[in-house]
Image 1 (cartoon, rainbow, N blue to C red):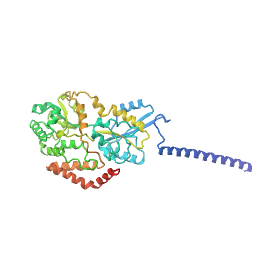
Image 2 (image 1 turned 120 degrees about the vertical axis):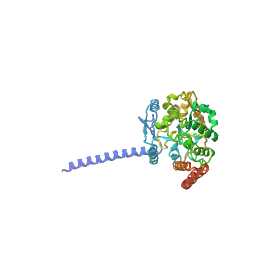
Image 3 (image 1 turned 90 degrees about the vertical axis):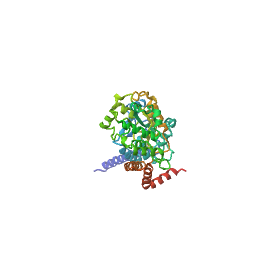
Length: 437
């Protein structure tokens, strides 16, 4: 190879190396700038900032209304909603916690009230009382203190979620059967009558004598009340050593013969309803539509009222809420979504729009449901202890009722079990609450 050729090849090689280095420098420089802007919160994929599309991601264990999603997308060009429906709540919780920890969480989480205690101490959810979220301005007056309180962090400082579906537990009853037996049939009069434990027992025994059961199972009242109230206050005090729980436990102990011992979720129980052999059921407010679908021939015979003993209980399994991850880069889009769907499909909105119920004989059931939501006592809140505490409650309660233990002994047993298993965690959570004091 001549010296002239070698010189040409050397020049070409140097030019190639220079171009490669400059290309690599440009790529890494752009990446560094992008990474810095993300870490500093300067990058935004909100519509109108140069991005072609904004993808708003939502995780839920149940579907959301396709109509609501399509309406939101139509009103917000450039935003697409990606809804990921998990197989169950356990999967949703586990994946959400993992992704919140590593920074890959979705924009919005749809949480049942039962799940709120898992998320209210981790400080990975946005404070929905701060901009750009303005949906909390009138929320407290609308939903009442209880619903307002349970959507805050355990220390009460941040609004970590907002309610979407709120389902109070209700006593549905056959007014015609009660009238034949001489009991009050007006919903308000019956609710007042059943506040006295003795009247509840009198009614259940008389209806049983007439061949009409008033509960599916012996422990329906205490199970329903317990399924709609949390167990602790913010100081981690146990909140179930009160008269209403004692009355419900005592009623379960003496009203065993008055129960149908069937579930309405199979054909045997539904046949009992159709034949008038089961004249009362305790269900969340969506039970009105369920009963109407099963029993169209009984339209006008049913009514709804508050639970016995003056208890209030919002079902924590079917009630759902929206939370926004703190790391979301689409908070403005998420705020628009929450604001729109809460004012179009949220429970309080459709309750205000509801009319007299044909199935319930013209009763304004929506007004009843709203009142029950707002009247629920506000002291108990979700905590990270709930899963274990609810398990202790359920197993101890079933054992105590089967053994014929007194209500006081039953509640004492629950508290002992909770103390034995959760004292250390209770102290840790108290310290968490006190850290800003």
